[in-house]
Amino acid sequence: MSDLSDGLSGKDLIAQGAGITYDDFIILPGHIDFHHQEVTLEGRFSRRIPLSLPFASSPMDTVTEHKMAIGLACLGGIGVVHYNNAVEAQAEEVRKVKRFENGFITDPVVLSPQATIADVDAIKARYGFSGIPITEDGARHGRLVGVVTNRDIEFEPDRTKRLADVMVTDLVTGRAGMKLEEAHELLRTSKKGKLPLVDGEGRLVSLVSRRDLLKRRNFPDTNKDPRGRLRVAAAVSTRDEDRERVAALAEAGVDAIVIDAAQGDSIYELRLLEWMKGNYPQVDVVGGNVVTRAQAARLLDAGADGLRIGMGPGSICTTQGTMAVGRAQATAVYQTALVARARGVPVMADGGVSQIGHIAKALALGSSCVMMGYMFAGTEESPGDYFYEGGVRLKRYRGMASLEAMAAGGDKRYQTRADDRRVKVAQGVSGAVLDKGPLNDYVPYLVQGLKQSLQDMGVRGVGALHAALEDGALRFEMRSLAAQVEGGVHGLHSYKESSLGMRSG
Ligand code: IMP
Image (cartoon, rainbow, N blue to C red):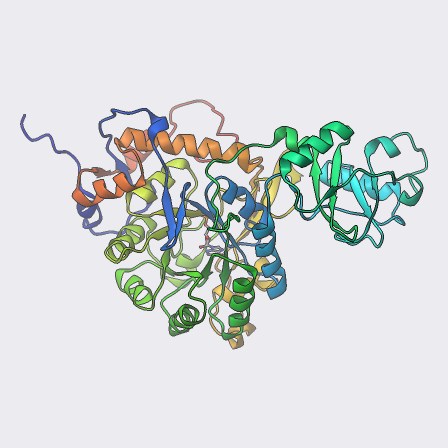
């Protein structure tokens, strides 16, 4: 047979008519002439923000605060800090990321000399450590007067005793600004577990822990700004009052601002976008959410440096059912990426990812990075405490338009004007997800899977993938319902799902 071209190009796949989701299609294998470790995953978040890992975390109050943003930036991705909080609280989250230095704990848990051993016990139960700096007034950056470690309190029967009576006051300290290697050396020679770093007036600045140093990893792909600080993004609503938020975030050093609206093609968003580009040209602005070519074009005309794509695919989302408006995510990504690519602007597929293959498909349809809520909820770095239900370790995960999150202020994304707030229509649910462990264990697993996926497609990176999409070399096929059943686990009497709560098939 002479015609060996098989399947459909991306263009023909989408042109078939009905809107399609990630599960509706499959990508045909290409030719492999390289090892999967040669695959690179470099993507782009916005015009001026490259990513060595094309992952962004959702601006949701159960997903992204500084811990998630730090963890993801260290691995090459980026976190988008949510805004279901006061302006100053959000700006402080951004500052924590910008201040972060691998190895230094800049917001250590501290106690005052008047606190008791029972307070240390409570911290140990909650965080798992008991080496605690004691400051004069119990303030995080107060004057350092002592340190309490496990060995000072473990045999003390009276847990009501004040820390003033048990703390070590003969301290080994480092000076603020010292290099991690020097701190390491001081820890080694002093044989201490914790090294507090203080400024010229004896105030606590940060802490270095021996245990952290032992397990410290080098992060070769860290996402850094030109000054060597971690990159971070933050979200704002389209409301006029959020201009103050934009100013505070820019002042805190945020790299990009995501305008967070479920329907991003509004005069409110366009006005804000133009105002931001005029007043804060150093900050990249990601517009959204959009799902059609015309919506994308309007935000691009207004100067968007990136687009966030998706209306309704989120795991916690009920928008499409409630509003009757939205679009199937695979079609939305393809159509908007087509318009944005022509202008050199990246798009980010947002929502609906519950397995590695979905990430691969989003990239294959033209997305330059993938935003995920569900995939990062339940990791150690997501906000909230773990709890148990039926013997399973869980964390809360909720839509920002769930009644619960809206009651806490999260309705700004869904109701454009402040005076709309009297009647709330939920567009999301609140639930729980399985414990996914620390990002440092979980993300390498996603990376490995994604590299193998691109290898199967026969491409060495996201750029090559987009080129293959454009020239039609990348081939797709629709999956019938029976094909989807065939592609998932079937016919077994019983089996175990991935322990990370990811779907198979
Ligand atoms: P997931 O990764 O499938 O869980 O989707 C996360 C995405 O859902 C977020 O990045 C938002 O775009 C979107 N989202 C967040 N909260 C809500 C909600 O309450 N209703 C609808 N969509 C939401």
